[in-house]
Image (tube, rainbow, N blue to C red; front, top):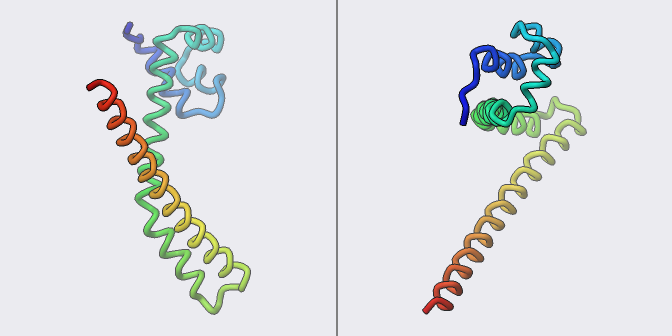
Length: 128
């Protein structure tokens, strides 16, 4: 894979930081047309995609680290007699829906593991 120039690397960083291509081009001191041309390059696209994925992964880690706090807030709202009934119901509903989704995901993972194990067993039987 070819290596990107410093301007291309700076442009990728700007694309991740600014809302529009125009703003990113201006911040990285390249023309908008140049950015569009770079987007036609497979190496640039690949680097941009990887950088964008890394930003999303980082955001997910941050969100996950706040889950305990979020559950505590929902629990406080749900149990607060000072909260309006509709707010308490919304908090309770969020807790229930999240719990149900977690159980469903665990069930799907187990079923998938079982299917994969059965497929491997079946495949190994055929090759005997």
